Length: 437
Image (cartoon, rainbow, N blue to C red):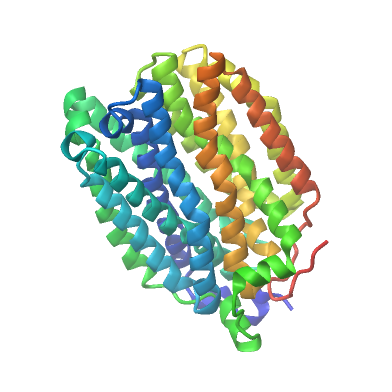
């Protein structure tokens, strides 16, 4: 029996589900991306002024990576309670935690004011950001997926998947507007703080919308008919260890592509190619907009042909585009840079879009929040946290972008192998306990 038949998703207005699943990821990824942009542009000399420019950039990206280390921790904690008491409560808590960490960064004194305490406080706030985001994505995609009618889970799961594109465009627009309307000295002094402080208004909007939603029908049905998981993370490792490993390793490519294009490329373009930061931000924003448009299209396509086929296509495109991507960036021509980034973000979307439904479909309801959140966030440690640092170091060692392209190819090959061994879930019944293949 399909869930659509047993618990009609029409019980809650579709628009409310769309808004609640979308708004949180848009806001929280906005928070995450303004940090990544600031790390690439100003944090190096504001919080690590005693370092060389290269060391300062590496240190700033290291604080960026702290958030990715915190995300799996948040995934375990939020997954535990999300699988035991419900999705809605955890979505609200994750939103507030992320917002608190972001606003606090906007209030931090720099190294010049309080010395070494400044980077310590920055790392603390960054950890709080990552911890909150660790619970956000899993809850948002579960909200959409568990409400979705049979045969449309890919489409419905794309609602929160579009959030990152919108969040990045808003974040990029904020930095672009500030950088274009004030002297560089003013931007470095206080202008960079404005996007962080403005996050408070977005959090209020997201909180209001999420307070209006109800618990998902799939979760409520599971809680009526099944015993709650006492320790969801233990059950995931005990019942579906292979699935967790394959899902985690397959998703590393998505984080690698996104943060290589939207975070590392800003640093690479400004510090190595000596390009204007505003031009690079515009190119990255164009690429993010293309990704946002491609995401629901590719998610719907995965409803037709299956999740595995679309994900494999993403890996193949990433392999084919890894070297042309940096070749186009190295031309220093804005149009070619935008094309290079945009095609790279289409490859990202081809993996990211179906994964919104794919990861939740792989795990049982009683530990689905934990399983999907851990897979998504654990993969971000390598893909999002390590990739910008490694790419920066590779440039310093070799003076060439070729090793970075080779690294992307390696990650894409790993993704393709993992997806090949994962089971197809397009027609899976979410109320039935899955088994390892």
